Amino acid sequence: MQLLHVKAAESHFGCLLCSKSNPMSMHLDFYADQAGTVYAEFQTNSYLQGYKGILHGGVTCALLDSAMTHCLFNLKIEGLTGEMKIKFVKPIPINSKVILKAMLEKQYDPLYIIKADLYSEEILYASASAKFIRK
Image (tube, rainbow, N blue to C red; front, side):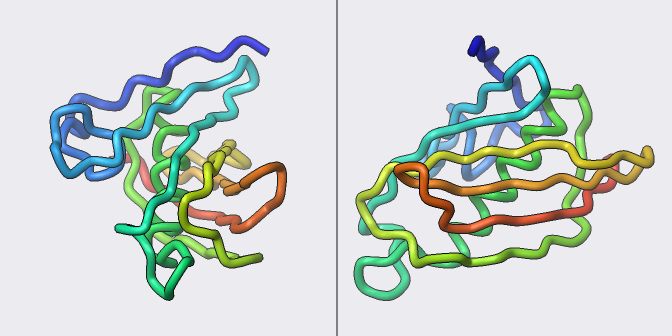
């Protein structure tokens, strides 16, 4: 499967999750397949834990939100999260490599409904569904 790099909007240059210029950023890189599904990998670490040995739930939410935002960037759309529903399936262990995956489910411009999943070693740990509004 051929993946193409997803470029973030210029207004997104200081993002905490994907910026290359923000020293506090997680430096996520997103790639899209021909169907428009967006992917990224991320290595969790102990600085991001909530309970001992478990990734903080807020970080999980932010990772999923970032994947869905990049799904819109792949369509050359800047969108703001209006509503997001998260399902935590299993606690995400610290020091694990996770895969993010996001896809557009429906669009009613200026409203977009996007779904995202977070996996590690092909096991689903969390999923999200969100409504975004064009910025």
